[in-house]
Image 1 (cartoon, rainbow, N blue to C red):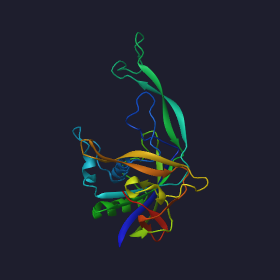
Image 2: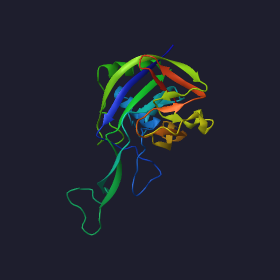
Image 3: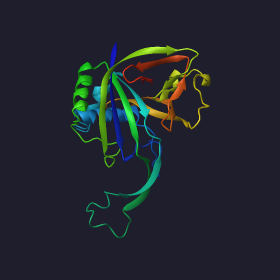
Image 4: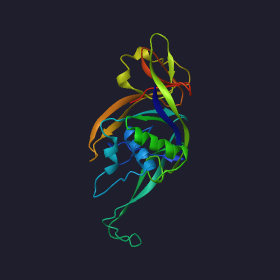
Length: 249
């Protein structure tokens, strides 16, 4: 039987910038897998940069880590204007050059009251055990945030559980995590007629090289109101102690 680590993480605000936006940055509705690597690295104290190299990413190569993401509160967004300073022009912030504007105000899209449950497993048993110890003692090496350093977050350790792979045929099972499109062969696998459900298709970055070159991304189905998704004719993973069904990626 395999083991999986489960914890909740939340904040007042969050922002996971979509990289192809420019003048008005928008956010992913859930943390991408690459951002979860950053959260794990912050908890364990993996250095972010040494000699201009993203050292922490070397611990997350070859898809050794698998995750699932559950949305615990409805996805809400707000726009907040922020002032950006051109540091090449305004080297002394107290002395802004008067001839050329060095400050620009841009509206950023923020997640409001984001709340997620993260499920994490890995073939790196030492790293997973170390992560469990930090979470159980509510300790981190670096301060946690949801995306930006201004979006400070809190977390709660749920447990370290056994999970097993299962299959569903014609009967729907309730999946509490987001669903990778690679698990969906056709639209009949999902019950889209559930009341009060809001389904979204999103595209997330998944894997990066240590030099931050993106090497894998994927599409996902999410239920933005935090409801479970009814799913059939496919494999899933069952966490018995929580009675929750998830899909890892």
